[in-house]
Amino acid sequence: MLTTENRLQERLAKHTGTTSLHWSKHNAANFQFPPLTEENIGDLTFGSYQIRMAKSDIIEHIRQSQTNEEEMEFIVELCNEHDDLVRARFQSRHSNNKNHIATVQFDHHKQQPIDAWYCTCSTDAREVDICSHITALLWHLGVNTAVIATDNHPLFASRLIRAIDDSTHFSENDSSLDDLS
Image (cartoon, rainbow, N blue to C red; front, side, top):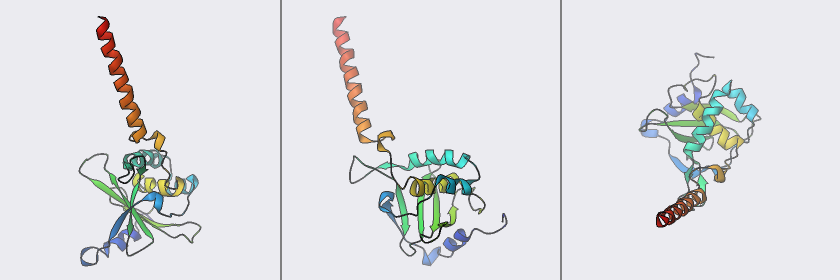
């Protein structure tokens, strides 16, 4: 199995050049993805390292919504030509100028809905196990069902407002101490 070509990589390569695929961006919360369990992901990763790394990839990928500042969103790209493909772009841990595109092929009608995966990172043209970027995409869409625990995210608007309020109160207390001197 280690020598087999990645089927999804081959499928995507057929569409480079003049017949390229078109992708549209969507909030993952508005996308129906087959439900997965932690065990499903564990079977694909062959260990916990990718799962640990995936959790930080998910947090890094979450952004404040452009339409509602009180909401956070996880942006995925859906293929306009094929409804069985979803992808996400993850920032490289090693280079600010580089993104890795994690793409998953799935089938809602199968008990094991993940058909294939491919990531542009250096570790994932393989079919045996998955990189942390694919793990992050599967975990967020399948296990988390695209739900974002906004109260825990450092960019959540109410947390930022509380931090600003706390700093202004601290600043006011600091200036009142100056008056006592």
